Length: 463
Image (cartoon, rainbow, N blue to C red; front, side, top):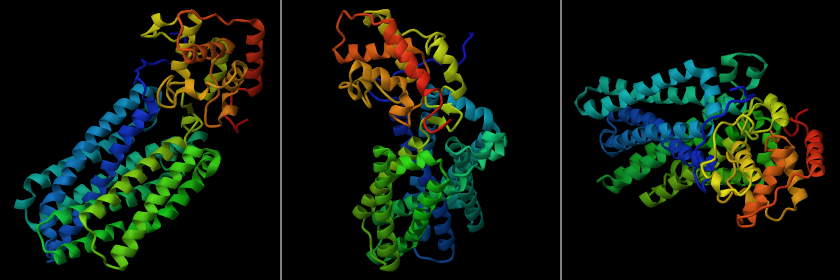
């Protein structure tokens, strides 16, 4: 196919925004995976204490917590596959670029993950029959392998936001050890140990032990939440190394982004204050209900943090390389001439519902350029967002998209594409009547082209 950009098959998720589907699966996976990482470290620590004679530590390792870690990395593995499967359907070009650049490092991550799974199953199956040395070694392998899995995937994900010297031809390692690599890795490690500590407190409350012995185990487990004390510093480090425009969105330029930053910070502060002051300094006893509430706060902080990490990349999926529309900056200029859908080989599933070819055209443009982040009627519905705009306001704002909202990419189409989207939105807002006039006034199209030429093809804030 003679096309300036590759086109991939499209899947629809109804009223759910595609990014929302990916985000929901991703948050669930990240939460479980980080717990499995921290849980491996905590298991090894309790095993060492048990072998040194600390009461009930061995019972804790051999009972419920071991099962929870097993379940978490099994479900975490399944949700990880679901996350990448969903992402491939929505952002196949992004995943392809990541694999092209980091395939050997990604393979390395899978090797460590395989070691983690093997060690975890081996300990689950044979742990009670092994001697002390073999138990320690198996748990150490599990803990190290799970953290190494995080190490490798963290570099690949951090590269999407801060490619660093890779953009200047620095190569694979320059992209991997990018500016946000270390702050994000250390931050996720602190989150992992904290999640393990909170789940451990819940599990300890279910054990058939006197309160005093439970309290002793809780005090040990709470040590794993102490790294939360440095999370504000790690968060500030992360914010300092991300691109300036992304930092501005977090600090007030985008209200949703700022709100989620506040949610993540507030939830983390509440958990950290309770752990450091209540459990570590005051040595208070935490019951199962309170530990569960703190874990729910941690899930909220994880969700908000992942939203911020994903949103900070906008208008890109790979900073400076690939827009959220799966179009490169260099390709936008070509599509301004050819149009966004000239080479799109995929028909609309519901093409018969549109009364004019222009509306069919508008639906295909929306599918190509808009529906990664918007639906027509549903989550982040573009029909509702633009319902009160005038026709000329619609034309102007779509033509100058990167000026309308700085975190959106430039419109990668021509004047006819813009007008087709305008008519589609007006037709949908009117209730999809059976008849709809075609809008092809040369003066209108000329004005749209003028606006497109004025704004150019670069993202907001870029020359």
